[in-house]
Image (cartoon, helix red, strand yellow):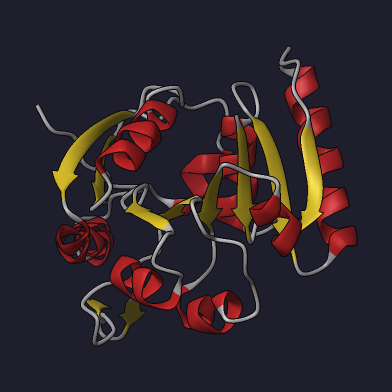
Length: 216
């Protein structure tokens, strides 16, 4: 299976790519091909030193979409609409949104778009045949690159496409010690996205780091 990461050279994208590459073919997408090539070279070297036989491939964001079966949107919310409007080819693709619309004010605040969540905005912008899911929303960005640490978190997954949801959950369950949970339809994504500013506030006010969630 090929997984394409739009915005794959950002902190979340690079970490996701290295976590996924031992199990899947990963296309690291970027607006700047040279930046993607550097990221892949460094990622491949890091993984090889850790004994993993895998290969990260550099691509434009568009090629990452064209050649992949699952597309992960590792882009900030403020760039979401502008980025998606420049891309195409999402028909019949599973599209995963880990995006959280929030702002840092006196404390972190959930600021959803009129659609209700970033994932619902993605669904509105993309073609009807795009199979949109939300996942990975509550994992701290820096944890993806901390390869010496296990990711022991629960991951809620939302989608209106049951088959796409199950496929994304299978992918999640291959990464470190992540455990995927069916959180319901895409409308529930607003509840999940709002957890991230809550987790950041808990971490801030209790002097904690990298707070996550677990369901038991």
